[in-house]
Amino acid sequence: MRDEATMMALIVGVAAQDARVRAVVQSGSRTNPAIRPDSFQDYDVIYVVTRLEEFLADEAWLSPFGERMIMQTPDGMGSRRPLPTERFAYLMQFADGNRIDLTLVALDTLDAFRFDSLSQVLLDKDNRLPPLPAPSERDYLPTPPRATEFADCCNEFWWVAPYVAKGLCRDQLPYARHHLDTVLRAELTRMLTWLIGQRSEFAVNVGAHGKAFAMLLRPGEWQRLTATYAAGSNEATWHALFAGCALFREAAQAVAAAAGFDYPQGDDDRVSAYLHRLYQRCCNPH
Image (cartoon, rainbow, N blue to C red; front, side, top):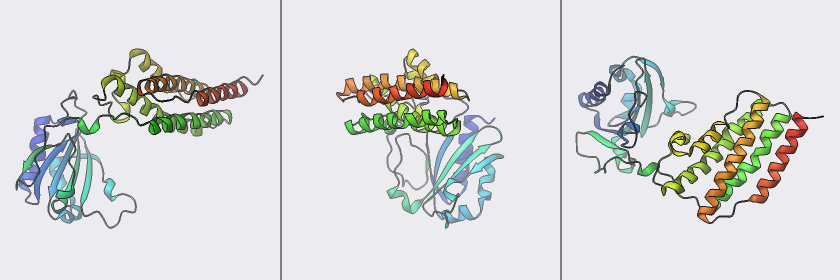
């Protein structure tokens, strides 16, 4: 596997040798001072280019980056025709384990382009890039919930919880798991993010999809969260549902108390009682 120095020299070198590439900016985890480096980090790179259409018409310019295991071009997928003329991304997983997410940005759109707080200039041939502050997680920190956001999160969680139970009673595991693993988990993740935010004065980044929860939640909370990841059976999914409800309740009540919000205890009580009735009916019919 090529090391970081080799990859960085390659990324800048390809740009330096191509007159159409006028600037290079890196962002993502490799510029994040709060992230512990590891070999799984992607290289998130922007090339500011002229004649973007030439890059799209002939992808031979990608060859110097190395042997690709697989590539995705999200801006060119589906029915997106003609191809974009302002920016285009090449997501490249290489055979040696390295990955580059390379986005081309048309030079004539640069004034409207917003660089995020992790952006760092690697090359600027024409001194066209705006001054950028030192990379930080500023754009990725959670924000305190508004009362309406909190209420909506609680409502969505308790509204959808019966979908899981009904799916299990009908022996429709894929349907039940979809609602447990997507809708309910999204709302649980939101609530846990707010909980961590309140404890840290909203100065800590929980990462995409709560990937830093293991480090940021208290040990008991983390153990209860892991209990919401069910094995592939109806019974295990019931237990995961109840574990998720208990953790959501605990987190939401804490968030409400700290923010001065009203927790919808009535919704919680009525839905929870209904879930337990369905469990008794479907799992213990006699």
